[in-house]
Amino acid sequence: MIIKNSMDLPQAFINAVSLEKHNAEGEFSATTLLKGACETILTDRHFDEIEVDVADCVWQIWGTAVHLIFEKAGIEGFTEEKFSVPVSNSKVTGRVDLYDLENETVYDWKTASTWKVQFNDFSDWDKQGLIYAWLMKQNGLKVKEIKFVALLKDHSKSKARKDFEYPQKPVVVHTVKVTEEALKEIEAFINLKVRQFEVAETLVDEKLTPCTKEERWATDDKWAIMKAGRKTALKVCESEEQAKELMGSLGGTSIEYRKGESKKCEDYCNCKAFCPFYNNCHK
Ligand code: SF4
Image 1 (cartoon, helix red, strand yellow):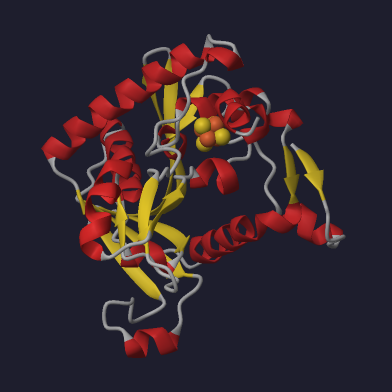
Image 2: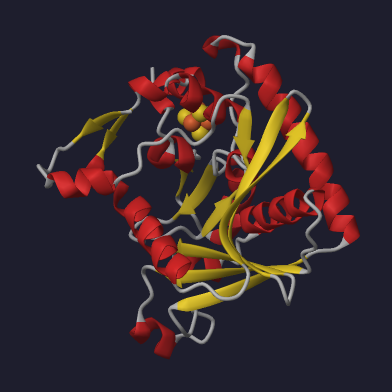
């Protein structure tokens, strides 16, 4: 990666940022499998050309710091153990933060935003946890559950006081129960993703299938029914036809088109400069 330092931060800050390639040759990590093939392959392929401003790596440093602290504070069991299982022509890997042998429980330390809890948006952690459980099963270790312990970076005590649906403490625990059925489902997911990645590896950038809507955190286009003199919409519709149909009965005076966006592509994808889909959208 090419490191930029737009804020002229000290060398120690730069040293604190991990610049390691996420996947070794022929390997796909559990967290990589949650991403699109397009993002994973482009990131690996163009790793040495990708530019990163260290000032944008603050949350990565937070995450690393939290892991280091908990690694030292470990309990009976093992910490930071890497598992690797052959799948197709590749290997799937996962690094387990902490395994409590006695209770057959995996702990994973996370730093997260409160919105994740408020929107109950844990599908990525559910998959990640089950991939760990599957990897460990292949290595003869039983896992009953995975507990994601998340430190909430943006928690506000005053919001917690006013809203009982807001996380009441700056830490939450999300538990994933491991069942035989869930392990079978995750095995099918792993096989599918590895095959997708292996095919993508053989394609030139221009031929890669873009990441899916889900992988891009994409929102749909919307049509808002507006009323003159009012700032907020009377109603936000999924289609222009629906908005036209409802406008009269709601007393609206105009329809505002709100273009959907791919939040991941815009703000959280390191390889977007090399992505044909992203570049076509921004011509
Ligand atoms: S820019 Fe978007 S579509 Fe392209 S690799 Fe990144 S996340 Fe995927």
